[in-house]
Image 1 (cartoon, rainbow, N blue to C red):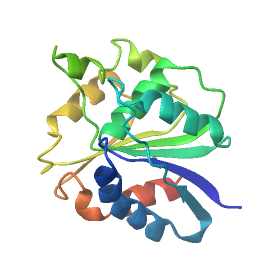
Image 2: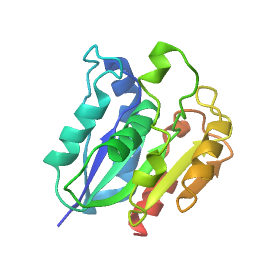
Image 3: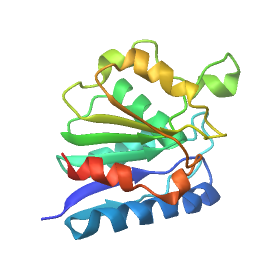
Image 4: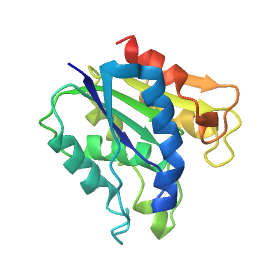
Length: 181
């Protein structure tokens, strides 16, 4: 039986979804036939958070117990927000976050993406949690991962020397971590 992975894309547009398709293709290739990757398009619904919390919550609810969740950039921060702000009846097999922004500032548009101050307390420490970030990411600075390290000390953090925001479209290290579970 194949293990199920759901991958949430970054950004808020069809172009962002299409850009992350190469990450999904890399993950599928590296994992092989023992895994199935579900890659839903999450359209911008016009709400302040683009509808991400609700859309991600629906996808998790529609999945099966033990599903592995992978998310990139905006999708990663919104997955954390969803998991820390809503009750989830599904058992999650693992959480793998790529280039995760830590939203800060007081602008109205930023407030929609921010995590609640107590978010870390609401993340289940029994679920494997991994963060990946490239040192040369020019869109989401590596320094933002420091905020997660301070608040989610039980998580595993991987700093990659290069790969930019799109990890050079190579998710070999992530696939290796998933297979090791």
